[in-house]
Length: 240
Image (cartoon, rainbow, N blue to C red):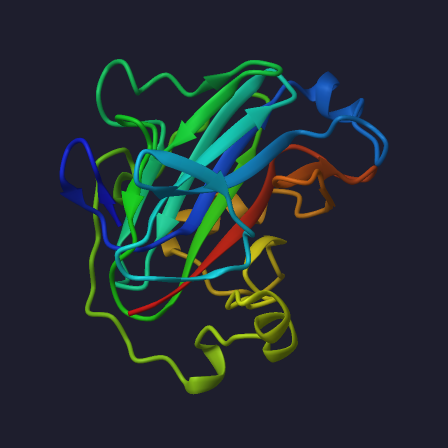
């Protein structure tokens, strides 16, 4: 993934560890019928135009994407990405002074990555980038390797064929899209591997979420039993 303004190559690693932090009272007020915590819209650029695309699309290197995040609560947002190269980066907040403010307000939209106009270019080894979203009532100090601008890039490991993105033949034939049902927003599964820098935070975070489709994207809601902080993932599938 490469920031189009800064020309900074991030690789295509959206194993997002994203953190959304909300006031305790606001989170307790959420229900399956509420507006939810956050809406996630994935957009693809085509020339000067942009369009919402299915979040479980299997993308190709060279595709240009961005995330539009709309908050339905007041709080704080962190997005940490572990890519298919093995590197870890914080995408929200950014590393500069203007981008470093990660407070979010109700019914306001934000771009991820936060720098520039948010566009990034898909690149890197075939696989799934994982983005982690974390919700808390107070700001959380990110571990050094996941701090804004910090990078940790071990040698990528070859994935077994069963863990590589695959096209759902029925959907592909009907719509012409390469869709992998395991991609997109999902709860963080207990015992799932994750960047070691995030393990201490994940131990105390709730993973109970409810997902609904709003037409252009996905609305993430806290389950009734959810407690602060809250963590979930976004799996971005891509092929070389």
